[in-house]
Image (cartoon, rainbow, N blue to C red; front, side):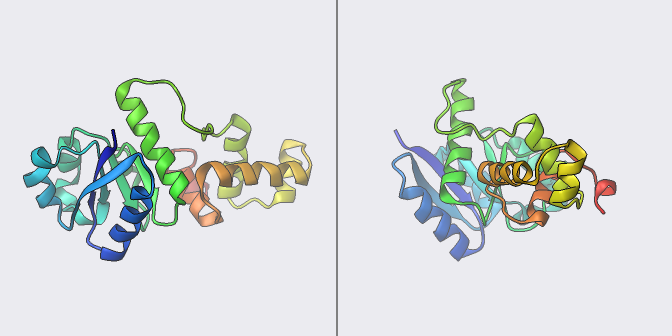
Length: 194
C-alpha cells in the first residue's frame, strides 16, 4: 500500500517537483497539495495522510508549536532556508529543497518504519558514526582538512573519505549546509562557529 503524503507548500514549482519525485516511486502517493496550513487543519481527517510535508514559513510564528503538535502523523519540514533549532524539534524530520530523491525517500521510509515500530532498515544506514560526527563538527566550525587530520592524528585522505561519507549520508555538500545540519542536530552552537 502506498503511503499517503500531503504537501503544504505555497511554491507551485517546489510542490510539483516533490510530487513528481515521490510519485516516481511505488511507495508514496501525494494525495493533496495545499497552499495554506489552515487548509490542512480543515481537511486532515478526509485526506488521512501518513506523512505531512510542510513549508515551515507558512505557519504563523505565534501558533507554530501549537499547530505542529496538533498534527498526529509524522511532520516533515520542507527547508528552503534555515529553521530555528527550537522549531526544528517539533518536526519528525527535515528535508531540504536541495536533497536528492533517494535522500528524501529514505527519510520518509524511516518515518513510516518508526511509526510501525518496525526495526527493519530499508537501504543503507544513514546514521553518522562517532568519528564522522567529530569530523562534521570540525568542518562546521571552520577547520580545514589538514587541521582536522592533525587534530585527530589521521591522514588527509582519511579526512576526505569521512567527508565523502558524511555527504553521502546527509545529502549535504556545502560547508554552510553542514554547519546548519550540525546546529539543527545540536552538535554545535552558534558560539562554536568561527
